[in-house]
Length: 153
Image 1 (cartoon, rainbow, N blue to C red):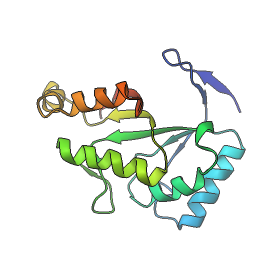
Image 2 (cartoon, rainbow, N blue to C red):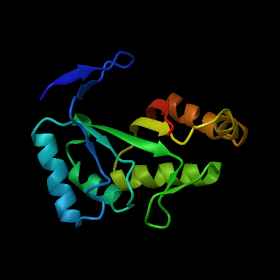
Image 3 (tube, one colour):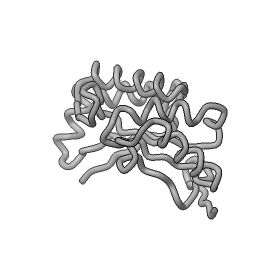
């Protein structure tokens, strides 16, 4: 596997990572086997912004004893309370979602978190006004989130 060093954090990231949308509807045993196979082949970056809530507990099981070898990316604002990917900008829901993701992933930190759907200036303004940006910066300071980024369509 080829790796690249990220310039602002020094993480050694595999050039081939794994997203979860295609496997999110698969049985848990298949998700676990797929994740472990990817890690065994050198993949160490997993983008968890997927369509199904079931990926999180499956990844938590798959990463037992391997968490320090991988980097996980999530979307801040993703809301899986329906079982499927939803979206919110409400602070309390985002706080609950972060806790839910950490609990289900069986970890106490997130490597990369993206505030998604920032397509216009007003979108960032909403995150600032409702306290989400401050909350995420507090989580970063506490070490719960290692890196915060922004993404859009």
